[in-house]
Image (cartoon, rainbow, N blue to C red; front, side, top):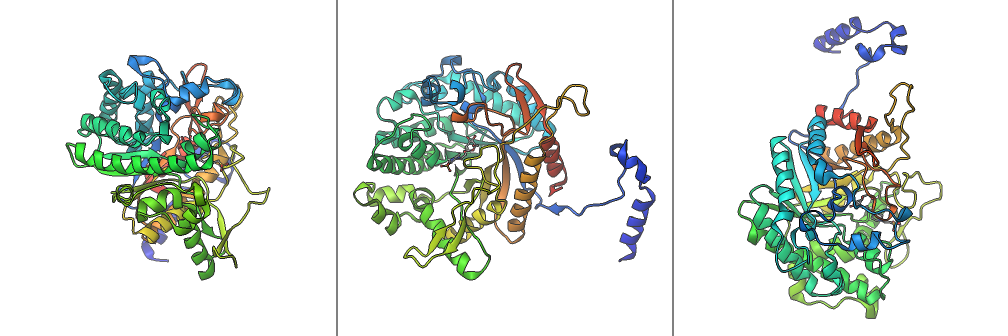
Length: 488
Ligand code: GBH
């Protein structure tokens, strides 16, 4: 032990509390034990994420038009207990309080989305300046709090008027989206430099037009869904170009995508190679075509007559180079090599696999934050990555009145999740994976789409009757992560 650190630990020991105090007022005094935190790079951006329909409420305010999610959530039988986001967190009116919360938390960034039907109530045509004013107020507040805005242009709330014309199955949608992007960026590029086109293609195309579990709730034949996938990536590419053309200030353009994950079940060269093959293939319809400008042969072959129709020119637009890739990371999948032509097998999950309150899809696999960004950067040479979402739904319970920490949520499983995912993220960054920021989903409990309010992802508890916000224990954990720029 070097002399200086010896002196330091001797001093710590001298200040240590008597052991008995650990059991009563221990929290007030200095502990005997020091921990060795795992640090993140200087300038790393810590943030939180939300989306318009999930937090804003005020669905009729200032001329906002209806979206497919208003229609879907008001259709009986589509969402948990028929819940809608008519009010949800009422962030539209309470944004100052929510920005104050973020300021207290210490975040440097906030990822939010703009509701297309606030800006263009009919999807196209005459813009509604009053709709944009809400975002100007929010941006002023963020600016005053020194929080950098990261803006998503489309987080699933398609104007209903466009759905009435076929929505994402109509080729005109790609141009309508680019026009909306151009107008909005023209209005706000003096206040926003980080732009994301679209959030999670699969969650509104496959789930909305194929499985019918998300708005607009359709179950179309496979060929139409495959074509809608193509118009979605085309809309993204056209929007990237439109954003750059419309911006009055320098901007960074990307997207926020939940790339299906892959990781080697065992860390040897054969498993890693199988993982590389798997990751490109399971992302063929979205991220791979964005990065490579072509659909993989096996994707087209497997779809046969249902494969999308496209032109070379469209592939060029779709693969317009990005300034960053945003990845929403919740889980991943183990891969083993296979003696099948594909070369890989995605391991089916044993029923006992650890999971969140979102039992059907949110599996505990911390290595996701190591492997997914590593694959994106090494396969495609991406130089700037943000984790645009990462978070956990917990069976949160409020502490009963009269108990210690009454009225709070001690969400130790969310902390377990975050601590491990952040440690794996740090591991990748230490190896040179260029992740420059992390946005925790979510600042607040909010409307979890077809699960309504039954799933809570917030680090702040929201009582949806009173709109009271109460930070959970995980909020304190994240605050300490940010304060120390390390996994604590
Ligand atoms: C994100 O979606 C969203 O961007 C955000 O709005 C949402 O609130 C948050 O995460 C939490 O859910 O076919 O059974 O594997 C999450 C991603 C949810 C996408 C589940 C894929 C797959 C279900 N998804 N879904 S399954």
